[in-house]
Length: 339
Length: 136
Image (cartoon, rainbow over all chains, first blue to last red):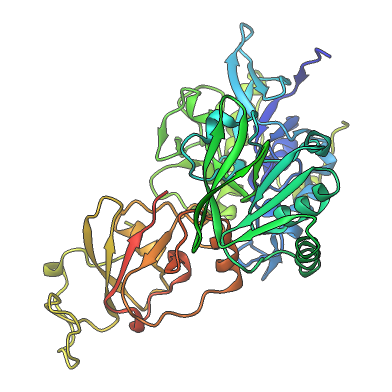
């Protein structure tokens, strides 16, 4: 399929600020399409702290992060935004007609005269253990996600980590793989009690091998992984044969490819002009935690303000011949847009 | 700088006469609501930081205010471990919460004396604390 997505504003990052930009753009009759590396909307709020209360959203003495995302999704629904989720924005290119093209990791192309970068702390990527040659083995035995459990059939798998995903995959793959070894730095596991119990049962019955108080410190193999080196707190170093090593230590945000787009960057943040939160590239704006300017505060509430002002400026790019008039929603209400 | 912290001692003459015994040889004055935190950076450099105890700050924020190389990516929610430190002195610290322990489980270079700076609030009991920034 070679269909390009065309819109007025491409919003990179579907966190609270990127989502709210859809509302402000919608009031000005600009259509939006959001791109996010995560499979769901909400950014950090959904991914890392959905159950944490936020106390500084005006009008809400306290609101759970997950609820705030749901509310904004409801608020922007009338404007029928498009979504490309689970794909990271990889590159940007200026087209001959003056529009920008944003291409994702899966090759999906998006065209619009304006880009809002609302990427927060960057895209969430797996936390990689500090093992020297780990990059050499990526996709040659080292995987940070279990994409297709069938890949592990009849093979020797070493999983590292102490959280739910390490426990869940150990349980799931115990039936499929030839041999499963779970390695955890401590004795206690912090995952769901049911999962911990199940893993202990599997270890007790010899279905899996459990090594605690240990970590993987080295990888072996010639082009393809064939073993891991384990450092045990008391037993010292030893090797375990392995076809796959799956370190599951959660996700961490990385600025990623945005750093290479020719934007002015200061300490992993994009420099903007506070008149309209525009970057050094015409038509590209940066809003929310990803931007920086004198006096910057990384607050959702400040991001909402930034999104609102950026929309006013983007209007002039999207509709160069139209006149912008300011209206209150209380007076005009919300006029939605079809999808 | 976001916080009105006295950087140079000469800028901050003690407002109150010292009635307590200074706990450190090198502390030339003791200001109420100010403690001293010692940070060893990743190159081995030593930093003596005057730390206010009345501003609700934590170690991560203190390091950032002094422009030490601490990212504090998650803003202090015990969710990124970019403020991971090793405790080198003997002060009795509050026990880590479940959130902090869960994050340390997913962090690297963790040792028995590992803590997250963002979870250590600046309080009088921390006076003289020595911490080393963990590798990133």
